Image (cartoon, rainbow, N blue to C red; front, side):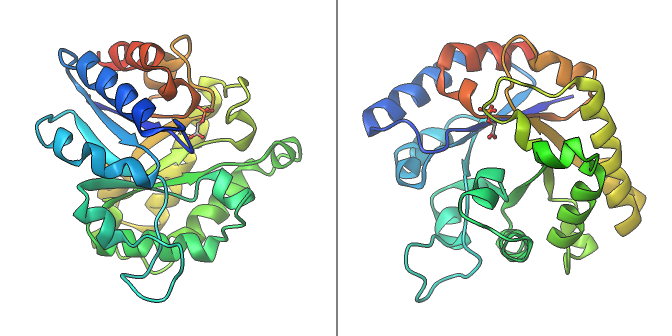
Length: 253
Ligand code: PGA
């Protein structure tokens, strides 16, 4: 099965030169790799550099790290789904824990973003995950349930099959403390159950679930093989072309 590997560059690299170098190295490196789709999510300002380049490559798509929910208007600093679509973007990360925590994004905002992205016919990658404290209090399952239920409010069955979920335990992001594959599998089954309760069985069967949080070449394959996820959301390792390509090669089985 084709894996989806999403590179979340976050607020990196610092210069256009660095961004172009990283992109071109990845582009060259995946030429002969089959059975994988790579989504590069650079900072907004770098998106135009890659718009033309990805047109010629089947395997690479462009993604955005965030979006606003209105098409246009007086919303200082915001970027609309239509603007992203125009730049060749196909995927949008929504509800990343750094946005939830640092920028105080609420479930209500995430719901609006999700619906706007679906309406624009882009594919949302909805991030969910529990914090260290919630894990310690054994509230992980309840948190996932609540994050997903609130994000999905008002999302009809006919749009739900476009959603991709990323299970990203907050305590595993950028810490080197990756989640055990069996625990990821447990969360994957829970996420499918939540979808099954809301939508027809067909939707939950088609649902794509990714894992993210300290993914490295050492552990990447275990999330595909043991946790049976459909792919990975990668932060730190996506900034090192060699490491990232190693992961992509590894999962293209
Ligand atoms: P990480 O980040 O791979 O650096 O842990 C993952 C993410 O934040 O999506």
